[in-house]
Image (cartoon, rainbow, N blue to C red):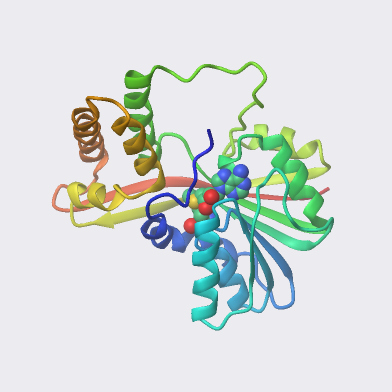
Length: 267
Ligand SMILES: C[S@@+](CC[C@H](N)C(=O)[O-])C[C@H]1O[C@@H](n2cnc3c(N)ncnc32)[C@H](O)[C@@H]1O
């Protein structure tokens, strides 16, 4: 089942990821008068930055609660932006309805990457641009997710492989992306950057992450077991060990994550 990112509190993670939207929106300027879609807008980070720069913005996200948060943030800042509930597999925007489509760590979670690329390429016009960010494997973000994933697989068994499921796409890999976008007549460039996350300690970082939608979803699944409380404590111990291992600052907390900025355009 797909994760509802409206679970728990995505907001602190959204704040931590704001610098990435600043990079992506900054490199897409000038934006005045441009029609921009922010796919998987979450709390509206990229959408609001684009609206501030005069773009005509539509933020799309499957998580209804986050769409409400994004609307509220726009209203608080007096910004004009439309926010709609929708999915990458069926983007609620007309053919050629945008010159720019951004997706900051979002479309990478769509279960059918090919359907999402078909939709993104439909939505941007002939001269349109698509810009997606993706984590690069091996970074600290993945180490935490993998630790949790491994623990859940130990408890519930590894998820069964569905032979009919769409093939996952390595959203950071230039060759894989060229093949995936090339099908729709789009070329691809990939740029790698580094994002640092800092804090006071590994413990505080984990405490703050406890309300992340993925953590809440895992906690709900573990709570369904009679030994749920023990299992939850076991997961937290495992996560703390993983976070301490990747912490680059023994006196506080610092992890660096490599990420890819994928730019796709026709031709
Ligand atoms: C890590 S958050 C990123 C949110 C926002 N772009 C940001 O930078 O803070 C991932 C977002 O992708 C959205 N998402 C997940 N699956 C999606 C799908 N199939 N289509 C569109 N968005 C999706 C989630 O609802 C969530 O808001």
